[in-house]
Length: 292
View (cartoon, rainbow, N blue to C red):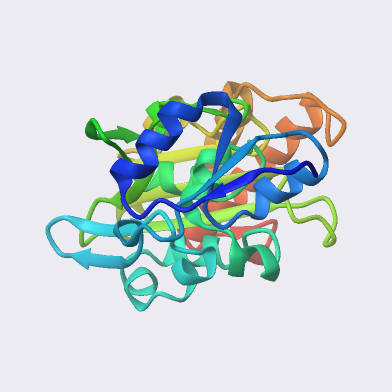
């Protein structure tokens, strides 16, 4: 790791000015779990690190019945997982956060840092997209809000401008008939990054699905909603057969990647399996004769 200057701004304006002035020679540090690894491996060699740890505006988790959930960008994954507010109103989100990477990362890494890193094989983006979350970006020029589908651009690429930091993540208040489930698949228990993840958020009454948001990630360049599968589920009483057909649609419609972790065909097969299980579990269906 090469030498660098460590800067600690005390306001968003100050941080924004530093980022604008230093440009590509600097990197923002939140929890630092991904950044330090990249620097140790010489993948990144910044001359300056801008730590945002002192920016209190980026902290806290709160909930309002009208406006929904606010998660400060510096909230750690374990903070999200343990928050009574998240557990009560967004159990899918709490369950997802409890599975991120490993205990060390969950206690050090932040949800804002995770989104900015834009690792395609991570957990929060898919779950947040299924929940229709928004990302608030702040700079000395003001604030702007982007949906997850606008914020995530490509492999390790986001829509954040050089002088911006993530202020918070906002999730709309859930409706009375809302339900959701997040499922991840790893090839081995030793792996920390999912090969496939599926997030499903629905409005339902019993077995009938009124509306669905189905997102596939980790096997795609960025998490992606599967519009045709969502439309197929909407308005139907969900049976095992409906779940299987929706999963087939999801497998066929994604832009699957092929790399050293898995071929395109293998990933499509596993998307089909994970999507089917996710839908079945959410609607309390049996798969292959077993209660899931």
